Image (cartoon, rainbow, N blue to C red; front, side):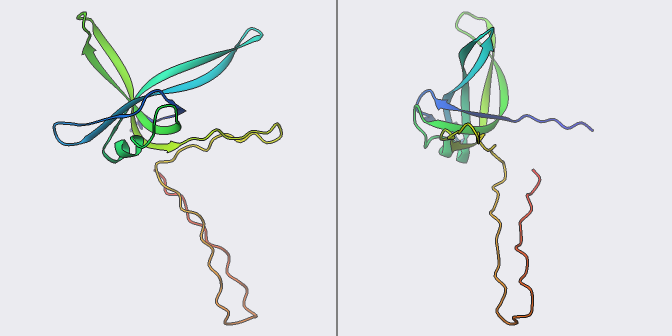
Length: 155
């Protein structure tokens, strides 16, 4: 049995305000684009590159994406989806877009030379913080219980 994985995570700036509409079935559909900036070295010179990706989100994911505005830095978790269409000149074209499952603000992380902090990856499952319980004050001789940690649920 093979396992197929189709996940992508992007961090960048929205290129325009999200546009909302409803499908014939009444589902909220939100579309926008995201600019993802990167740099690479060509010879001895550093070059900048910007890639643009089309985003589409449905239902609750669309509501969340619709809260952001043009220029805001966000991170999205989603899957790639391709579709074919015929352009105005009659040519068959293929389009690839990111179907957004989750979107979050992505402020730029502050980096120091000694301690670079990469952005934490998004997760499908919300992680709950560890909960510490205090021991009842019944007996002074009994050792305090160890703090309990919740296990991550495998996706």
